[in-house]
Length: 159
Image (cartoon, rainbow, N blue to C red):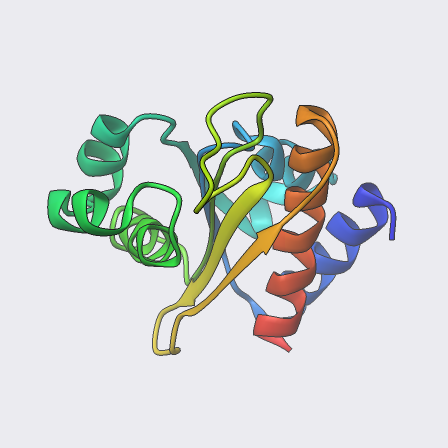
């Protein structure tokens, strides 16, 4: 599904349920927030977005604990969950998406190759959900696939 179409579907569902969204992004650099706010009327259901690219930003802006980052790394389902839950804590939204990953072309390891992306979806009074995916392609492709997966995952999470 095209990103713009997916963003409209997500926005309609958020509006229908009267929910506000917050984003916490690392490797996508605010792309989810950008695509969501490109939909007219987004102030009705988009509360704010955090771009927390460094570990320091993740700690300061989202409250991600140093122990999580040192034990599991910034690219982990645990870090993504902490980012999403921190975004909820530091906003007035009811739902959060978090994305952290290695878009490349460098930065990968054997354990976490380039293209590794971790997602989390969190909601007030809901159990958080996480997922790890490894994408192929160049930096732009990995980021685009991550944004698409984040929005598709949010639709599943709220339906």
